[in-house]
Image (cartoon, rainbow over all chains, first blue to last red):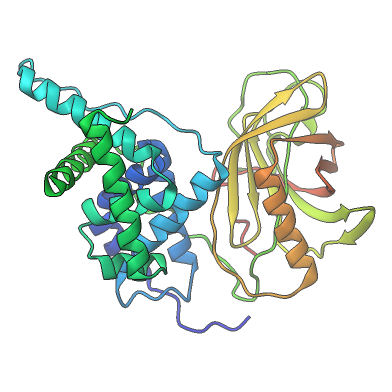
Amino acid sequence: MELITDRRSEPDVQVLFAEHYLHLVRLAASLVDGQEAAEDVVQDVFAALQRNRRADLTRPEHYLVRAVVNRSRSVLRRRRVVRSVVVPPQRTDAEPADAEIVKRAENDRIRTAIRRLPQRQREVVVLRYFEDLEIAEIAQLLGIKPTAVSASLHRAVSSLRGVLDGSVE
Amino acid sequence: MRDDVEDRVRAALREGAEEITPETLRRSTLPEPQRSDGRKWLVAACVAAVVAVAAPVAVVSLNDSAPPPGPSTSTAQHYVGYRWQVESITRNGRTTPVPADVEATATFMNDREMTLYDSVNWLRCNIKIDASTDVIAINGGLMTEIGYSDEDPVRVLVSDVMEALALAKQATVSATESHLTIATGDFRIVFKRDGVATTKAPPRSR
C-alpha cells in the first residue's frame, strides 16, 4: 500500500480539534442521540483523521461534517451504541416562566419527532437547520442529488408540521 | 407556515445542542495518535469473552512484566488483563493461519471491556461474562471505519471477522494461559497471548 499524500501534521489536527470539537459533538448528538455516543463519534473521527494519510482536508469543515454524518450513520446502523441521557446543566436561575416551560416542552417534542424520522430525512434536517447548509451542499455531502435532498426535506418538514399541529403523534 | 416550522425546528435543534457545553464534555482532548504502518491496512481482529465470576474488575497494569489483575476463577483469569494476537481463523471448517505481522489483537482490559484492533481500525465494546456457559454477551460496540484497499485474502478475512464480531451479540470463549479461542457465527478465532493489556488498548506499535 503506497501512501498517496503525506500524513497530516499533528498540529493541523490539533487546531481542527480545538476549533470544531464542541460543534461536531453537538452535531453528532443530533444524529445519534446522547452526548456520550456523540463524543465517541467525534473522538473516532479525529482518531481516524490522525491515521488517515489520505484525508482530503482542503475543506476541513466539510470533511469533518461528512465524517461525523458517516460515522453517526454507522453507529445507528449497528444500533450497538450505549446511549445515555443528556443531563442538562443545572440551572441556577429562578424558575422559568410558564412560557419558557411550554417552549422547552415543544422543543423536546420537536427533537423527539426528528429522532423518529427516517435516517436520510433526519440527516437532511440536521444538516439544513443545524448546520445551515444549502441544498446543494447537503447533496454533495451526502452524495445524493439536490432533488433528493429537497424531497427528503419536504417530507421531513411535512412530518414535523404534523407533529407540531398535533395531527401526528 | 412552513417558515414557522423551519424556525421552530432550527430553534429546537439549537436548544438541544446548547445543552452540550465544554463543561459537560467527558473528553475534551484530541485522542492519542495511533501509529499505523502504511503497508498495513485493514486487518482484523476478533473477540472475546469469558466465563467467570464477576470478580472485582481490575484495572490493568501497564507493565508487561507485571501480572495483571483479573477475575480469580475460571476461564476468565487466563485472558482478562491480557492482549491477544490472532493466530488463526477457521471459517466453515477451513483454517487460515494469520501471520504475526498482521497486527490483529483482542485486549481485555478487565472483565467488562474488550477492544479489538486491526492496526487501523478498532472496536471497543462492553462485555458481560456468563460464568456458567463460557459465553460473553457483547454490547455497545464502536468501530472506526478507516478505509483500506488491500486484496490480501488473509487481511480481508480478518476484516470479515472484525465485522462479524461487531455484529455479534455473543461469543463463546475458551482459554488457557497461552491461547484463547473465540467462536461466533461461522468463525472461530484462535489467539496467542501477546502481553499484558494496557490502558490504551488499541495500538501495539511495532
